[in-house]
Structures are given as C-alpha cells and as structure tokens.
Amino acid sequence: MRRPVALRLLAAAATTAVAATIGVALSIPQASASVTGSATGYATQNGGTTGGAGGQTVRVSTGTALHAALCNRASSSTPIIIEVQGTINHGNTSKVSGNSCNTADDVIELKQISNVSIVGVGGGAVFNEIGIHIREASNIIIQNVTVRNVKKSGSPTSNGGDAIGMEATVRNVWVDHVTLEASGGESEGFDGLFDMKNNTQYVTLSYSILRNSGRGGLVGSSESDRSNGYVTFHHNLYENIDSRTPLLRGGIGHMYNNYYVDLHESGINSRAGARAKVDNNYFEDAKDVLGTFYTSEAGYWQVSGNIFDNVTWSSRGGDTNPAGPNPQSNTSVSIPYSYPLDGASCVPNLVRQLAGANKGNRVSNGSCTPQSPAPTTPGPNPTTPGPNPTTPGPNPPGGTNLSIGAGSDGSSKASGTSYGDVRDGDLSSYWSPNGSTGRISIKWDSATRVSSINIREASGAVGVIGSWRVVNNDNGAVLATGSGAGVITFSATSLNKINFEITGASGTPRVAEFETYA
Image 1: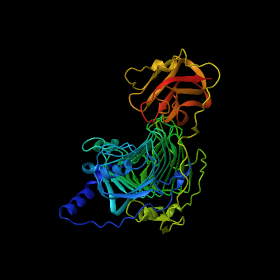
Image 2: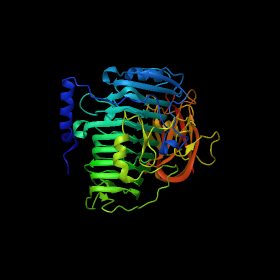
Image 3: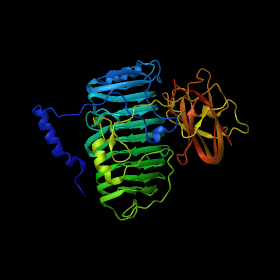
C-alpha cells in the first residue's frame, strides 16, 4: 500500500541530522509545570487515578535521580510528584536500591509501587532510547513527556522494545499528552509503543501521539491473556503505523475522538472475545482500520459517528475479517463514565493542535474548541487491584481437600522445595518460587469442580505473599485476584488444572498447602 515505516522516515531523519550538524536550535514550545487536569475514561473507575497528588514534588534531570526519588520515599506507596526536565538516556539511568522501590539499569522501572506522578517540565522531558516499565503498580500518572526509539534488539536495548509497557497486576494508570515514537518496525529493532499485558486494567491514554512504528500497542500478549481491559483511548494521533492501534485481546476498550492516519496493514484489531466501543473517530488514508485480523478467534465492536476517509478494506476470508467496507455494530458496550464527544469531522484539526508533549496540556471542551485544562482535583485512592478483588478469609471451607491425591507443578522452584509439598497435608514442608513471584498449580486427570481454595503459608513466612491471581489453566480465565494468603472463593468451575500465581511478595513465599474444595 505505502512504503514501510522505516523508509518513510528517511527524508525526515536526514533533515533533522543536517539541522543538528550545523547547530540549528529547533524551537520547542515551553512545557507545562506539574500535573494539570484530572484523569478521564476508565482511569476514573476502580477508585480513580490521582498519582502523587498531595505528596512531595521533586525535580530530576537523570534517570538515576528519578529512581532515587522513588527510593527515598518513606514507603512504596508514599505519594510523590516527580518533575522531569532534560533528556533521560542510558548514560544517566542506573539502578538505585531502597525499601520503597525496585528499580533496574537501563529502564525507568515503576515496579511494586503506587501513587506516583511523572511529568515533564521546563523545556521538556525526553526519554531517549529508554522505556518506562510499569509492573505490579497502581495509581500512576505520566504526563507531558516524549519517549522515543526504544529497542528490543540492536543497541542499546530497553524495556523489551516498548516505549511504555505495563504488566503483572497493574491498576489505574493515566498517560496524558505524551509523544511515543520509533524509527521503524520490528526488523529495525522496535516493538510496541504502548503495551499492556498480564492483568492490566483501568488505563487511559489521552491527547497523545503514537507514530513512526510498526506496532502501536497491544492489550493482552496472547490469545489466552484475557485478564486485561477497561482501557480508554481518546484524542490521540496514530500516524505512520503498520498495525495495532491497538490490538485488543479480551476485555473492553473504548476508542473515541482519535485521529488515525496512514495505517499500513490494520488498525483496531478486536479479537479473542474483546469488545471495542468505537465512537466519533476519524480514519484517513488507511487500510483495514477495524476488525478481527491474524486470528480465527473473533472480537466484537460497537460503532457510531466515525468517518472513513480513503480507507481500503481487504476481502473477508480465513484470518482476515474486516468490519468494513460498511462497518456495523455486532455487540453492545456499556460505558460507566460520562464523556463529551467532539464531532468526528473536527477531530483531525483538533487532535493535531492538542495531542502530544509540549502542547500546553490543552484539551477539548467537547465542542471542537481547545481550552486550558481544569485545575487538578485530588480524588479518592484506588481500591485494591483486581477485576473482582477478593479478601482471603480466615476460615477454611468445609468438605474434602481435593488436592490430596492430585498432581502439582509450577514455575521454577527454590532449591530444597517441592511442588508435591503443597498437597501432602504437612504444614512443615513447602514450595517456594525461585524468587519472590511464581506459579504453583494443582491438576487432575479429569475435569474437577472447584469453588474455593485455601493457600496456607509455612511457619516463618506468614504474610509474605502479596498480590496474586487464580487462573483456570484450561482456558486462561482469571477466577479471582487479590492479596494475602488464606481462603479464596470464586464461581464454581470445572477444570483440569488450577493455577495460583503470586505476582507480588515482601520476600520469598513459602506455600505449605494449596488446598482445593468443591
């Protein structure tokens, strides 16, 4: 259709290189100071997203200093606003240790933390070849920054090639007025610009630019990773992208007032049971902008008010199932929050004015007119992560422990521990993962009905287990999520294998017994 992303970048790159060589200063509008506005979309749900509101404000100019700001807090949940000015790169980003952080070299690591805002100020904040990784975290705001040219292969590498990546029980993230860009596709060493996987929920991406990449982003890393969702994308510019704007596997996505231009292969790819609500977007000079692609596992969509301008559609067949040439709704999606809709016809001009970093964080008034954002109003703290959060109970369920006589396996185990020790009725023996997180499973030769489990920690490790999720291994369905060991109940399910996945802990867990009950 069009030249690949990498080829289309050559002319622009040459112009930039000449300017840099002769020392021409490129004019950049002054960036905003501190967080402005309030979260929108699904980030307003599950208790809301307020980031570091009410906490200390720290200004940094290196990645190491950013990590130090996280590590110097009283606890991993102490609110903090980190203002970033200048360029963050591999040369100034190192691991910092502390009790309130879990950082790493060569990546901005937001791991096992909460209540943090990162905002670009001054002349702007650029994360150059350094990705931002959010893992086992909640209540995070990222605003007014540029992340560019993050690679997964070649040199240097960071964050698996994702500009911003989220995984492993992430809740309540608002990413606003950012610019995410690459310089090609997978063959040039780049991956996704905005990826969410492994139980990431209640996320909003607003007023942002995603461009010059093979992959815009995904929600779910595989057809079985369906624990993600409740994601809103609005007033974003997707430009010169091959595919994944986004790729949505399972869960619910809401896309409104976005401008999609120059999509080469496909756009919103709803698959594996996902449901997308697609309102008042503008699609231009693009191919297969909505549908189910590259899989036989269908997704669904509800459409209204969109404009398709010079959009081409493939013929249906095999793993190619475009919504067009005359897209019609095949599901209904209920949205729990209010949202003003701009008319689709004004979206290209409006988004060009407002989206991206260093644009003053302006927003639309809902009638196609730019306005300054309202003052930030702190909201309630997010609730406990999870699609249906479960508080483990103190009393074991009645009946027969179905784990006795069953089989077991898991992820890598610590030396001296055994998978079989979780089903022997002996509290003095146990299984531990090789690290602080891991999976332990109970399995049967035939389908077995289970409605509750009891995770019992060994002596000396009671209270170590933090966040977890219970998964039906047969189909990948998440049965429950929460924190802390004990009795966990869920809808009765017939399965051959059940997984208890520890996604956060304060040390090395010791699971003495993994009891299962009908």
